[in-house]
Image 1 (cartoon, protein in one colour):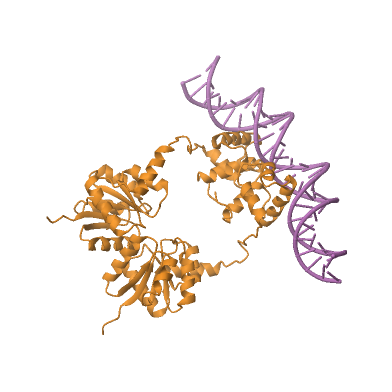
Image 2: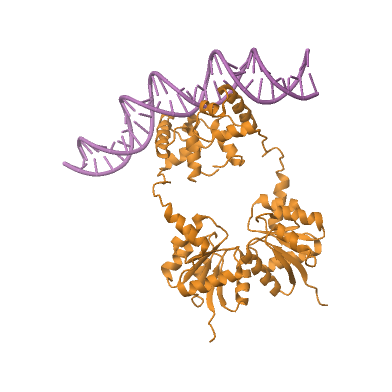
Length: 217
Length: 217
DNA sequence: CTTAAAAAAGCTGATTATACCCTGTTACAG
DNA sequence: CTGTAACAGGGTATAATCAGCTTTTTTAAG
């Protein structure tokens, strides 16, 4: 019996990686690369002009339309296509994020090509390819699923402005002046933010704001 | 006349990228990939077991021994080998850093393969391949070469420890306790740091420390 | 080894800023 | 009318800032 090649597409903004991978996989005799795209929008344009791939290799960080959004689009429009995330990030966040968006597996760019081919054939057959890396992250994600742990803080415009001004060596009085408010009103903002960020000093406020990326320096 | 192929090596920790690129370049008929390595240490081991490459394609971020160090090692031990940096970062810092380390050119992983081949042949002949991207960065780097602008601050161990503890909602008294010092001694550290960072409040200190990447959160 | 100079660490007291309290006003929606 | 949210006032305790001074430790020269 002659096994049919698996039709795939590659979506990655690094041209050299994309073309190199295509060359590598085409050589393998098991994979047929139908097309490639440099971001999600490019993929959407090209997908109608080719036969449908069975599997899409998807990078995460891309300009215009990233891997999360692209994966969600695929799952909304072509749910039969399997998405295999392909990234250099080993952190929990992108892995969980891609799986949540609908990816059926997650491979590192550090992987060996034979492992990638295994993953592609596996995902084509079974819809999922969960390796050691991913299963560990999944487990941990379920285990410490404390919903209110890093609960995103809701801030109104004034509070955000105040928070920004806090990240300087201005005194509260000076902040009150720049915001054209009474120092006592500033007190109220400060108290509100102390509660929201669960801290009790201006320094703690600054650190918390930076950690949650509400402020950039 | 039959043009001889250019012998190169590839150093990059992402196996799929490395192998893919090798496959791509080998197909091009102009390039011969002698060997590849997944970091600088791996490269040092392998370089004696192969004919010397004319050009090495060098990634920047790699475990164990990164692109800067690896490039310096090459230039110290095999100065005739040209190094072409190959990275996804478009920022000034890594570009200038690699060129300072001895790289003769800098290519983005977003590049087209034909451009990369041009760069390899160019660097093999002329020792340098300065494209638009790099020349712009070089110019800017020379233009705003204000040596004392971001003058690095010299800190001793205690001052650094204190600075770290400042980036929390601990009071100075609590910091004094953890460092087993009098609160008044802490005052002196604070004063010294205020001078060094040219600020006048704890918040300013925290911001300055984070900006200079002396502290990570 | 001794000793003077320099540097680092420690302390006191005073001033300002910050953190926290309760209360009151206005304005606006239900 | 009532409740709620934003704004503002008074006041107090604690922490942070600052200037000036003493003690200890280091350094280096004699």
